[in-house]
Image 1 (cartoon, rainbow, N blue to C red):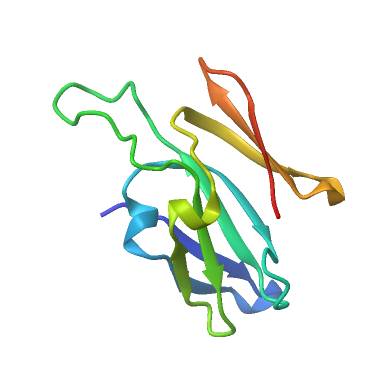
Image 2: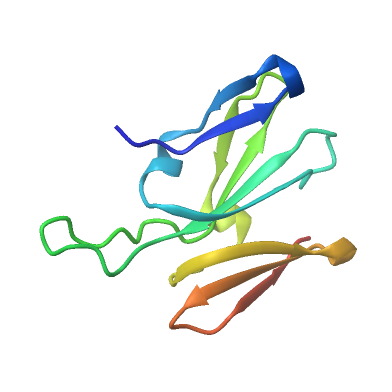
Length: 120
């Protein structure tokens, strides 16, 4: 079964695996930003994706409207609600980046305009 998960490279000691919540599995992920969003010193994740052009048998994979996952010291992640995050990206995102120190997320979308969200 395919799964979106977190792998942390520990150099010559291999990788450390972190599992992501069910919400991270609902649609393909094409863009990830890792940053400390709430100032607690722990990296949080913003995920973006979707795929509208899937085969007819499978249907569309469009359940990711910009997903924010808040991390803890044990590599556990909890989902921030869409209302709390303020993200509403309904396009097929193909890349996601944070613009330097501006705290602005930029979503590069397929067949749709680029979208930007400034974090509070």
